Image (cartoon, rainbow, N blue to C red; front, side, top):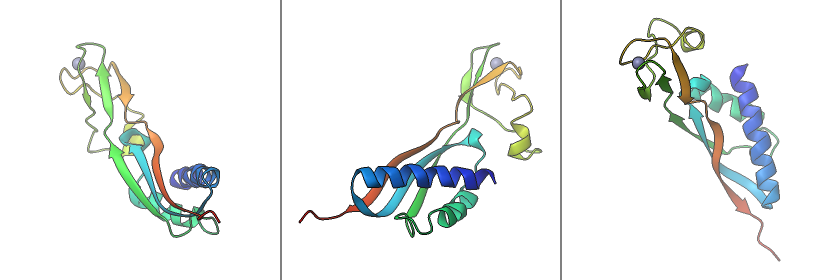
Length: 129
Ligand SMILES: [Zn+2]
């Protein structure tokens, strides 16, 4: 239920932001999801629909933009997009050492791709009387 808890946190944050801005209805929620979060966009959308039921987010569109996973190699200093072992499902691949695409060293650290943030919300604000 990885995606469900992620969807719930999007809903909580967006509802709070919408309330703070006195929005009556949220139309679009834009999120940035890093490759290393291993969230599946389709699953996230599906769970967002469930989690947003009976909130002012109900019926809102979830726009997901993926950011690539970045590794930094401590052997040769290369920093760049991670190459996953295509033989492994991503949920398992994250627990195996990720190799530097240049020198093949396993002394790598993740420097990008763990983002999970709401970048913006498009909402309708109640017209002041
Ligand atoms: Zn390297």
